[in-house]
Image 1 (cartoon, helix red, strand yellow):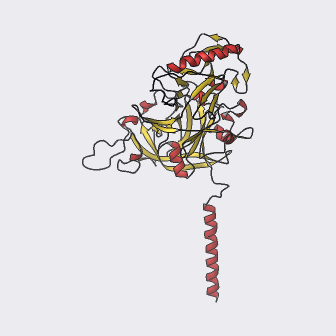
Image 2 (spheres, one colour):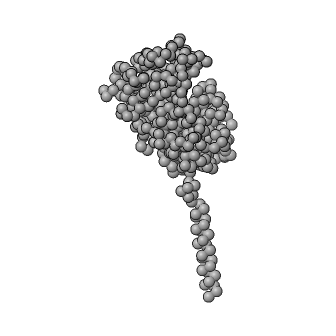
Image 3 (cartoon, helix red, strand yellow):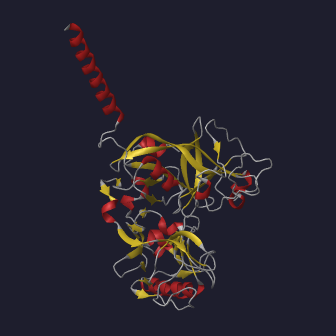
Length: 430
């Protein structure tokens, strides 16, 4: 009888222990990370946007230029990249076919390990590899949690020479394009969170001004207690463009442009516009500092802007390169969305989907008394590219599953991208 009682007691205790251990191993719905969040800064010299991730074993913080259309993350492996968890990918492995720019070259003789190489992107010595990355988690759009790890994160090992032209001190480029091995795709898959990421770029190069990238979806809460996910408008995006120059990235339809209520003539040949009047090749770029327009659109664009500015008693002055229209900023009144200048509207796939560009996103201060229209002429064969200046202080949400772009248009100054309620420790962690 005693032995039977002892058996029951031991069994009960074991079941209790297993139950407690299991409950501790499974995060509750309230503690489970909503996603991850990355800091973003703006480099004063190159006007590039930089984010930060920890990589390697032991972990080392890497600063990386953001490429919104980039296929993958690559870092300089020639200059001191040491990690006990770094693994070169095999050409016969499952990951190598995921990468469009990967190449295997000639098989080794005798047969043996053949690395997955990246001749196009990473120089002749570059290979693709996997390693550990660690990023901060966040919950409920406002609370940062502990760092979470992605243990087999695929990236490119590039050469030091590829850093030329990038912001000083960075170690590579973080690709956020619509690809299987981009940063948001890999993080979403590894952490089993929605394939959604949001970009909120800072407008200032000051060290204290930091934007954010969220991977996993909203809400997006910022001071003073505003959830930007409730202010989004939506338009479809397309991830590839079929034509003579096949490219992949994020493309949206721009049906028309108007300035201060006046429509900009968009007369051009069929390589720029289709039979429905949609402007083709309208991409979104973090590497172009300003929006690029084809000459046939740019010329009437600045002409109408100057006309509307004159009606507001804003005098034109001599243009300052690379801009084609500049103004006496002493005649421009300041508002909560920047200078009071003619509003620029990009009408997207429907008349109700309008990307509004106010003064803070349209004007660039070049001196104490001169501000210029932050759009540039790309030449007759250029395609419309929405550049970084027009993206700043504007939350952009890319839903990779639904292929929908959410956007807020210009944020008021009291809700700038540097005002997310993520805590001082996060904002200082660069």
